[in-house]
Length: 240
Image (tube, rainbow, N blue to C red; front, side):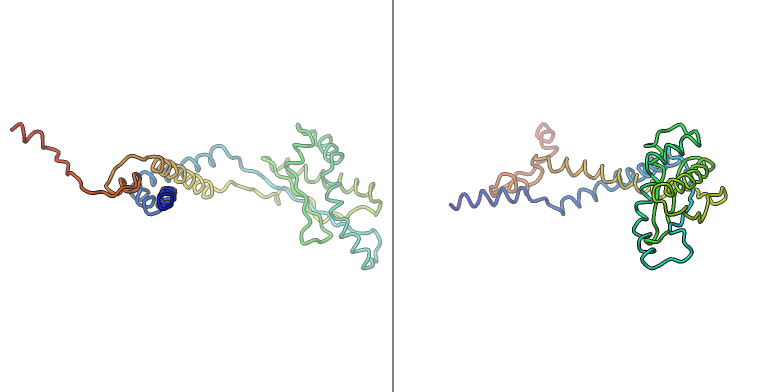
């Protein structure tokens, strides 16, 4: 019984990762880790500078409500509840395909759906349409086309009057979105650091060779009775 307890306790000790030993290992390899950090940051920055394109986001907005001049509280509640339905109509296949035909776009409705966003800020009666492409003029044209076609489609389906246009997209209001150089440098450096540190840690955990007197007790489970010092020049001195 006692023997089994010793064996179990020894197995548990072997399974425990020595955090101090890992910390000492990483501290010993700090130069390589620092080089990996810098190299990863350079690669991330190069990826951002040469492979990522600057994009342009154009926005247009609609106001959804009844066509009557005086609105009751129930009418406002109904319009607010239908705003999500209107947003779905704007990104419907019918509307997107009409936009593609009108703008003569070289894409299908699924591709157009990926660059179009429809939001309802603060659960209001306003629907904001956003289009992001690599061309500012193209973003503006698609946003305005989507604005007009979706307004007409909503009027046909809901039959509650044409939604009011708040803002059409204009070229000077198109937002330029540049990739963040700092972000990609930081991500590249951290990724390289973590990968190299992981390699060092895995190699350390898989290495079961005896390197010190403590390793004998740890891996073999037997106490160390004595040790013989190693003399590097012992053979040479004996020959002399």
